[in-house]
Length: 566
Ligand code: ATP
Ligand code: MG
Ligand code: MG
Ligand code: MG
View 1: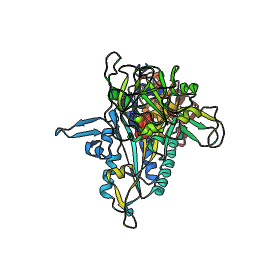
View 2 (view 1 turned 90 degrees about the vertical axis):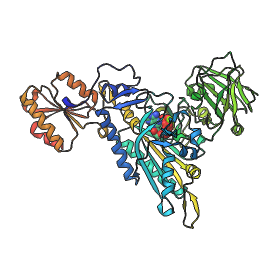
View 3 (view 1 turned 180 degrees about the vertical axis):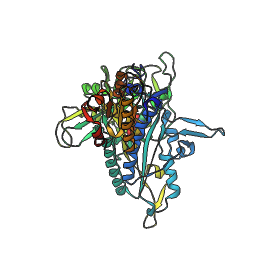
View 4 (view 1 turned 60 degrees about the vertical axis):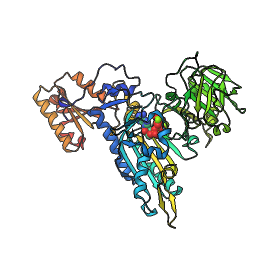
């Protein structure tokens, strides 16, 4: 590719819309442009990097025995009714009607569609196992899209689904995928950790998240400094969305009790559909105010205030040792603390609370109550023991060594689904004895677009991006210092053509611009190797080979360049 023809609008200024370095760099390097909240256009450089990651993902998925499919992005309501998620999924699911008034949604994930496909085709145990994947644009109407591609509303995901005869076979698929994921993220040049993800809310099934270690990550992870143990603490950030869109059973719609005098929250469902999925024996609701209320509801749970503050990232913590239980506006039962709704309300209760339906959460104030709050949909289990027990002072639960707590970006997630979808949607097979049984499923996601940005978040310096070689948009950039000089230009041209003929993805900077500008752009866009054709060529017949990462320069005679390109 010739730079003079390439649509690569780099920026000198740091765009104000970006908060974190990778987002700033992607905009400055002309990789992406924002269209609207959470929606981005990929420019040639950004798309090339994305494709490189896709290629790695594809190769490793094929190597692991998976097959590629492509499923519709628009999905009919009926399928989501079957799985029960039309009601449960919440506002992240973008719904709309077609011209015949039929309801549809944009796929945030594809369990329903793939289960439907498989139930129609798979008859017997002989048709199994299956592992099907796709790389596709997903849409999730995230409550707070931010950080560019990190939390977009439209984003590229690789999602795979496995189908097996029993738990044992699923277990093999699961670890097979786990290993494929390790290879993928290694090949992308990432410093990552596979961490145990929550199982509480999902009902004891195995799940791991792949986390890219970065201070700007939204998750907090504890990991052992010696053995492989690592877990997601995941309470530090109130996040939108849910893992695999698993939002529990269907309940009545949540309502704000509307009595005068207290500030009205604009859209109650908006914040209550924010599932905080890791508190065991406690409830977390996100509301509109700043500090945090902890209301002890039942039982005699001990609470480490300091740790709680740290994990929640708040300075103030209001503790209500005894919350009252009251009846409000005819609702079955009410849990109340002494203060109005706050940004996060954590109610600590024993498991008996889980059997309650459509209860009220709020405070001993008028109009500070929410009706029809339900466990699993509005409120999720969080490992409360994690909050209490895990700090850097604690020993590793596996080997007793020191642990460390760091932040991470979730780039991948593997998940044993079991028979949840196959039972709900009647995806069965006949086993060896001719008995009908539900197919045992797993699902495996990778945020492809998020991975590109996470790689930049980890690989950059003050001058710009330092792409890991396997995902760099170009392998090589050939910079002619002065294109008006025919000899230099012709030599540059030769190197460019030689590189292309060897299958090297080469960018030829043939622009008639000052060398300083050209070098700055090359630094910014982070191509791993630069060959500079300049005055050296005239002096001693050599060109400069510059390595972006180490910043080392080699002087190579033109005639030896062939070896370098090999
Ligand atoms: P998060 O916890 O960040 O909201 P998730 O757990 O909801 O992610 P999954 O349902 O596990 O996401 O989807 C699989 C992968 O898709 C995630 O591991 C992540 O890498 C990616 N992903 C999820 N949501 C987004 C998003 N809004 N923007 C970009 N990538 C995303
Ligand atoms: Mg989510
Ligand atoms: Mg996840
Ligand atoms: Mg997650």
